[in-house]
Length: 336
Image (cartoon, rainbow, N blue to C red):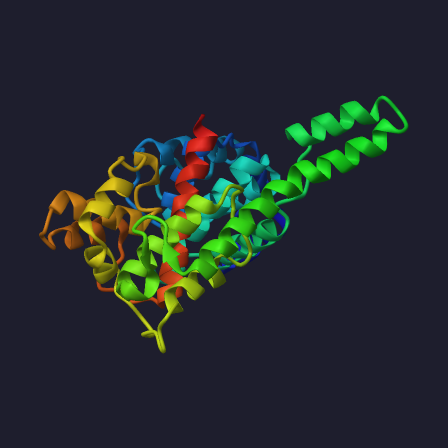
């Protein structure tokens, strides 16, 4: 993070000649971030309505203490840059659960670039790269993980237990992934919705985008999911179809998904801290509250700053929905 701070300032159009970047970096590193803090930083970075109106002041305080010339008001664009930089710092230095949450909040917050270009476009791009890397390395041991602790305990007993410990650790980490991905492959080649017991080609494209994303998230046991997640969703979307439209609107995907399915799967309120960060999930919630009315669209736009008429590629929208499910789970796990 420290190596890129000056680049991010310039990307946001902020001159750095009079700004003590070393002090900014120290303040960021010293800022104590938890799950709610990660969500609040993502809202700040994407310029969303804050769930915690006092967070900006809390965030400004250590920066002001490190450099009194940084005021407790104003410098809003610089604060956006620092919010993004703090999220990157959390990705790089936090324990895995919090790092994954920061990554997912940044990636979900960009909504497949439907929000437009943020103040520092490189920061979501870095999160996307991190997501890809983590997906490919889900079986890597974590120092504080249960598998690693058992391996250390066995290693301390010496030969032959040290070798046994390392092999057992590999099995503990790899077996759940093998099981998960086998389940996903059966699901992909079955070409049938688990929730509705209906073939994908007997459903509308919009329904498949929403429901396949949720079902793949259900099958995902290890966050942040497999590298092939978007390919799996694309396969479901194309199942039994000679061709697929190049785009679908958010409004149609929400409205054409059966209301009873939406109520079963989105009936529980979203955490207030994630407001705006999981926009498609919010759209579904607003549609449930609105009943058969399209009045949810204006509420959705004011909350997320995305138009319900926006039309991404079907596989991109499905992948966004998939990641939102994982982000919500990740937030709940970090909050426990």
